[in-house]
Length: 93
Image (spheres, rainbow, N blue to C red):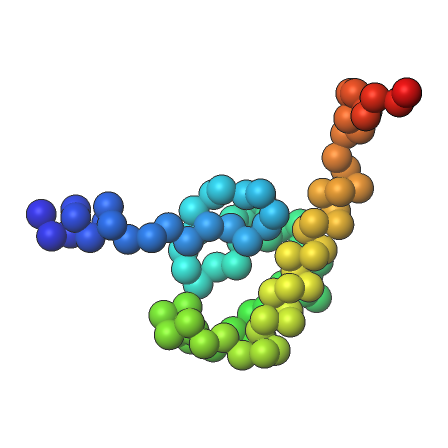
C-alpha cells in the first residue's frame, strides 16, 4: 500500500522540450524522441557535465545547465523549422 500511495503522490518529471508532456526518469533531460533530435555534440556535453545524483539534490552544475539549455534550444529550433504553416493567419483589414 505504501508503494502505491508513494507512486501516486510522486511528482512526474517531464521532458524539457517545449510543450512535451511525456514523463521521463529524473536523470534524463528529455524523452527519447526529443533527445534523438539533439545533435551528438550537445548530447555529449549534457552527459559530460552530468553529476550522479544531481537529479536528487537538485544542484546541477552551471556547465550542465548551459549544456541542457543548448540542447533544449536545438530541439526548439529544429521543431520550429519543421512546423507546418498555420492554415489561417490573422485577419487583415
